[in-house]
Length: 426
Image (cartoon, rainbow, N blue to C red):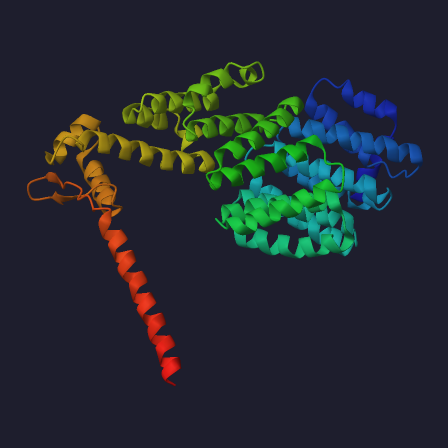
């Protein structure tokens, strides 16, 4: 079998690679490049030609969406990796893993491929490469919502990388840990991990893309704490970094910037941001979704708000960060509208309130009962009659608390005098 393969190889030269590029279709180019890689020669020129062949082959297989072939290629190349420097091996391995990621619907394949490579790197004692593949595996597990496995992997990896003091990798891992804790709703740990990432980043040169990722995560955590003004400034920094790099994450930074403006009651600024020179490149469903929400909020219209949520479900409800903040915005808007509508009444039919606010009766009834329990207004629901009874709020006289405080202070004085007299008598 191997002799048959070796007899079909092509010499690893620039001529052979040029032949592959001149082939009439991709499948022929792929076939030629496979034969180049099978050349048993290990001279310096042959190794350089093979490296180029691997790069070209990876590109062709990615274009053809042949993820399984990319995985097999990584296994086939293991003998070749023993002939080239470890740094070049790391570059090729990470390049092929990145190529598999470009093929849609391959998250499970990427996870199994990373696990295979971790085992191989451990057996070959290639620590530098193993740590980076493990970091990639943790990111994939996080995307797949396999939080427990990702956390176990990251905990061990962080300890190891801190010992080696590899700052650049440490920034990546701390950022991943911050995202993981945020997904698990553990905000204090998410903030601690982000602070660790910032500390490591301050000691080294951080590529703009990574700095943008740190700013994006900072903005998300500040928004979660309702500090929308600070969050906006971080999202703006992230947007500028990603926009300069033409990174697809720029659209998410812009989307979260618009969300912050809406949340701080500055929905009118949204149109101005959208029409700015940098934002015009990102006009599309994400921006349209935030514009629809801003319009609904400006008009204080629940009907328009619900229409926006329905029309842009993928952009609003399926984005967990936007969805969480819009849910609280919707509740606030609903409460404001209900309070405004029931204000003139002492007794009103729930059906009438539902008609005025253009929402289902059961939804309105549930919200009213929640508002009564939260003491947003004083009242009760008469479900038999289908009515809401609103009580007049009793105004407490300001003199009563002052009187109670005076009596309390007099009591303290009496107690103090009693203690003193007891000491004199003793």
